[in-house]
Length: 226
Image (cartoon, rainbow, N blue to C red; front, side, top):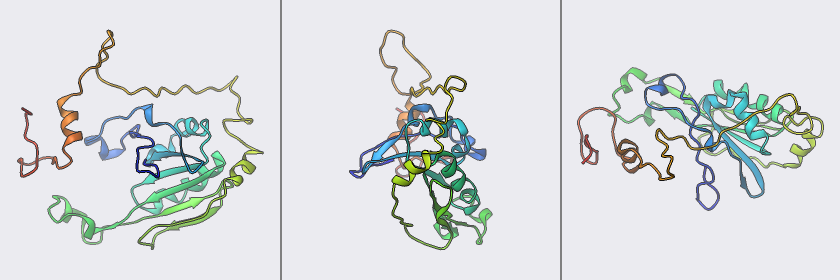
């Protein structure tokens, strides 16, 4: 997530890849389970099905999030149920963001484009719910552009007067959550010297044009690295 100055506010890696994502992505870590401030508003973010992980949500509630952003792959089937649920559970505003896409957004040279079919689409489903679980903006499946709303964070404090899941309505003497927010590397050197990053990771980060599969072409990186 970027702040207003364009600087990285928090870099979060999805804790658990979903379905076919596991063909490409590995597990994330807890380093990104952090809140950040935007114009005095405490914000948090989770990606896709992470939003259904109760303990991940609890870790963010405990840090005082007032506006939670849920990122989704673009349909109201994903956002319609969970948005008001999380808003009411955490007594906060929840913004669910999903991009609208259709077959025209798929590159012509993508190998599976024909398998998707001309009718393939993602209707967006961006939505916003308030601390009482009521819709501020119901899932939008028609707008090509930004969905905007004015929020008053005083409603968060008012809602938490009766219920605060990690505040006065919690029982830390009975129920506790431990969150490990350290970055995870495959090698930890006990003498304190940092292990060098693997060549695979370095190539992936430094070469945005790197392609999956096929023969190396212009602007791609050949293997093994030299």
